Length: 297
Ligand code: GDP
Image 1: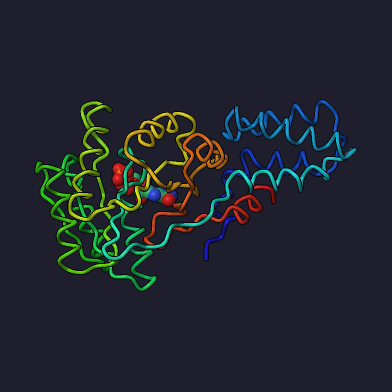
Image 2: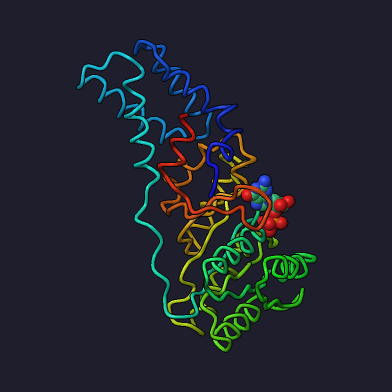
């Protein structure tokens, strides 16, 4: 069980704690509204999302004759949950479910791929880890180490080999072995962003040729500590690589967990998981209610 309060400790200490104390008990003065707006922006909720929330809260307060900040707390909570909620993860297709993990180097991509494999293996599914990051030095050995750590078999292609062939072979292996889930770690570095995106699109096509409908999920790993800059990169992935869900990694390390709100809005895909530490089991399905409660507590 994930401890959401502990995971969001840094965020609460640095940014959201201020929001919680603002909502303590004060008049709904112009200063209150300004401070709340400023705090949401500082928490990396994003300017557009903040402005939308503010307009909504002010209209609600006016229409309902609210006078105290404590009365705003509940409505803010509801709005934040509504912004983050999603209908749940899609059902698994007939085996193999092919899941890609994409993101820039350093975001926590490989760690997240291994954690995902571990998560499903613990849930009783047969899992194969596929290594298609053939660009980065030692990416294969790093993934192999993770695979043995979490007790999941891996099909890893050699450094320097063609990533398309790597995906092809991993999907073939998943089919041949009859595994339920294949988690593919992809490359996060190319000479240019354009190259990287073109490469990812190619990998998507290759997977789909072996198993129609694959990849069934494309998880974009977003480093929760990078703030708004990371979002710009994320947008490029979401636009071209067919991202279906986000993994918000390093949430435990971030002082700006509000990025979840900005990311959800900007990228238009649900946050499926969050990274809560460096150990294999430190991956939790996202829960909007728990997340918001921990932020505002
Ligand atoms: P990649 O280059 O994107 O594949 O990144 P890695 O998976 O190698 O991770 C980069 C660093 O981030 C490593 O030191 C990981 O241990 C660390 N890391 C990844 N996910 C998390 C997380 O959820 N919490 C914390 N605290 N560290 C993480």
